[in-house]
Image (tube, rainbow, N blue to C red; front, side, top):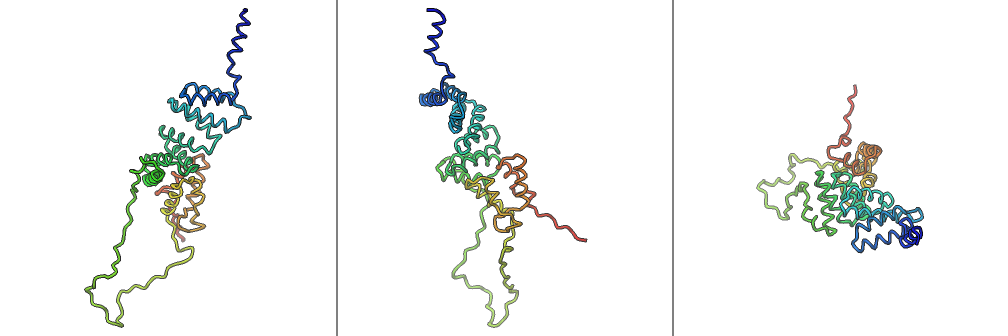
Length: 297
């Protein structure tokens, strides 16, 4: 047999890699994963992505990217995994597990603010994602936000993350509890006033104010309301967006107009919602200090 015929026969027996379709490569990669052959599965997912076409669908591409990210992650290629998770989330913005895993990788790289943003997005998609709450708590703890960390540890514990339960103690100072009221108080040693004798130093009761001005806005109430909203798994942007401006609606939980404007400006500069939130809504925020009155001549 001539050399040309031998080459032709080999070509017929061994199909070229580029002849495989995206679906065929995905099926092969899935089978190789089940067989615990991660190295071959990684190659097959890469081949699938190289043959992907628009007709295969963006969700299918996202699935391949996230699957390859997980394999790269297990193999120690954290940079490659981070890139694949980001590409996957560009196509599939509702993938809570991918947000959580990318957050874990970012946290491992000391990109704590970005990690918190990812954990927050994971809990916003799946409010029962206990591991994401626990990891967000650890990130808050690393940044010194003990109150937020305690709330997230508590939520994670409620969702079955047992390792979070010992960390649920709230470091905030305990509220002062008034003396218990006795139904039969002991008799007083002071002589009772005679009937008709006016009582000295008796202060008249002050009438309670009513109406919209009955509440004086406090920044700590704003922070408390936002913290409770974020702790429930809602997005930072959603929580800030729902907060009433004290200048328009002075109710409990309202936030200073200057702080709301500062938050929007920080977002416009390209900061993430979590980063902008952490920059603006802090106890010592300058935007929360009311401007000093101008003395009139």
